[in-house]
Length: 140
Image (cartoon, rainbow, N blue to C red):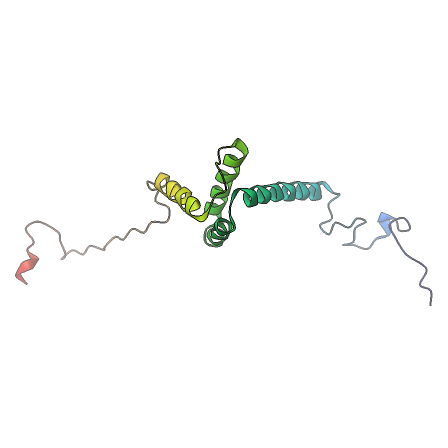
């Protein structure tokens, strides 16, 4: 049973396509501009991953992965720091888990003044509850 041969882009005009269908293989319907951006972003991410794999031990990479699961922004900042140090030649050797912990502690010390991630408890005050010096709670 012959169904008329193969139908390809050369045999179907763009005007003949039903609504929702496109000529290219791009499911988003873009002419290729966004796929190029996606490819470029993927290449940059692959380069970052390769640099991290060369600069860190497996244990350090595993710890970075666990940090990424909890707080992706913090992991991204640490990765950017490691990648920039590697590109500048400031890394004396591979970063092991202990060295990564030192980097994390340095980052925490720099951000210690920020309120991010801290819990502040404020107690409600009632009219009959005062913290004046004349208030002597020891008598109870």
